[in-house]
Length: 124
Image (cartoon, rainbow, N blue to C red; front, side, top):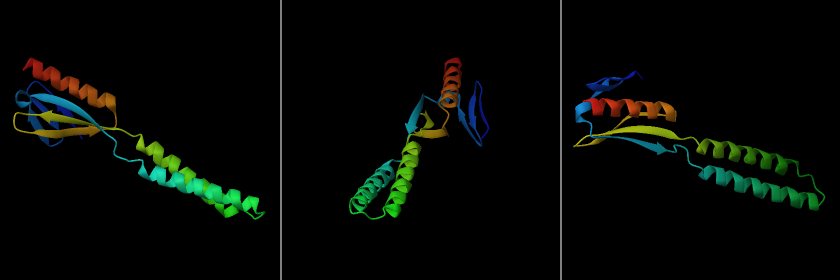
């Protein structure tokens, strides 16, 4: 998306916002991926590990339980790491509404954009 800010307008792709109509610029953080499935997979991994332990104690082969334990542990780790991803959203507030103008996973990009809009607001 093409983004530009000048003394009169902040442009985000096909949308333009008049600088003199913007009252506040706000950055919000969102975690788009939850970690509920990480807990479910971790619990399943522990259950299969316990099952493997009992099979070993009974002198049986725990191969399937160990494999499933490792699979669910890997999935749990992947989902947990994914839940740490943060999306930054730039909102422009006017006297009548607030609208999300831009979002990115790059905090520096959003911070720079916010600074440029605020500088244009002060100059207007």
